[in-house]
Length: 303
Image 1 (tube, rainbow, N blue to C red):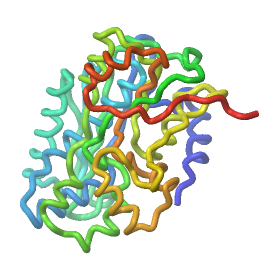
Image 2 (cartoon, rainbow, N blue to C red):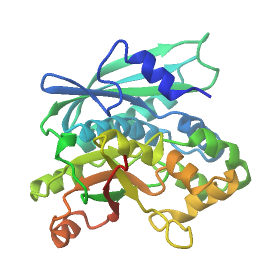
Image 3 (spheres, rainbow, N blue to C red):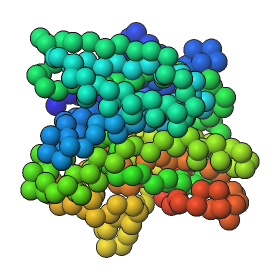
């Protein structure tokens, strides 16, 4: 298993912007991400159920755009990278269609990319795709603005989004029903509309965290050192009480994961976290977001 912290330490020798959701240069911010091994499950669904790979392209855009939003960015343009041992034209066109749809949903321009055949690197009959997005930095989200009592608001996910699929694929073979596999492949939600709606209505956003790889540990990336996120995602019976609980309960049982392991691996029904002031107008916020959950609040780190 790769030690993420060792990798980050090595990369930090060459860049001082490692650890955030996107990198900044002047008034521009940029982010790069992929879809991971969700691709393999999508390919299996295409072979078994003739399901289009289009949603993988949407996932690719969503992963990048959501990271740009977390850094206060307005998405501008997008490029993709698609590689395979040998390009399957149908697969490529389906993924590219999804990328185009994702860009349309966010108002981004798809301005180019790279397509490569790498028979000595990529395994036969599979592919990888990643995206690179650039945005205009419209909002500063300084950690210094956060304080004890600020509320942690969760926005619902569509399911597993694009993380945890290496583990999911180990346990999916006993549940190869079409409807179940389709649920696992629901595309990642793009949260641009929700973020813009909050800003338009004058609700202060102190921070945004995209709940991807690492689960809710991602929230710590946006907090000052003296604060931590007290998140309550389980009820008194240790049952998750947000969206898609049956899906997440299934993998928790199949993989024999603890509550802590679940929250460090999956989004558990929450795709984006928003930090807002404690004195926010909650009736107004509920009207703007409609579907959300107050997950907890920021608290002082014990010294």
